[in-house]
Amino acid sequence: MDEHAGLPSTRWSLRGLTEEGDEAWLIRGIAHKLYRCPGCHGEIEIGTEHTVVQYVRRLGGTDHHHWHRQCAEELLIPELSAIKRVPASESTRPRLEKRGRVKSGRRRR
Ligand SMILES: [Zn+2]
Image (cartoon, protein in one colour):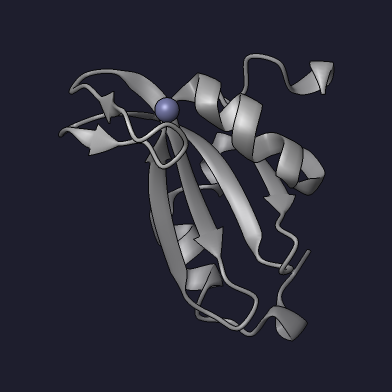
């Protein structure tokens, strides 16, 4: 996991697979409002660097959650398989939402 230390960053995002076969994209974000972290149920304050986790579902559709960086590293990343570093430019929300409209069988890996 060391090769992914400090990621996601402004340049690199991470992409892994959940047990269900959904894609989980981890993207660096800045909180524009108050979020609650699903990992620890604590607040992510406005202006804080954190990890946006965008799921692209195997059966189509997307949804996202806001995590503390440390919670994502300790709780979420260990649950994912096939984690890869991907350029942040490939993980913008419009691109991922478009990806969620394509059935996974026809998705470019
Ligand atoms: Zn947390």
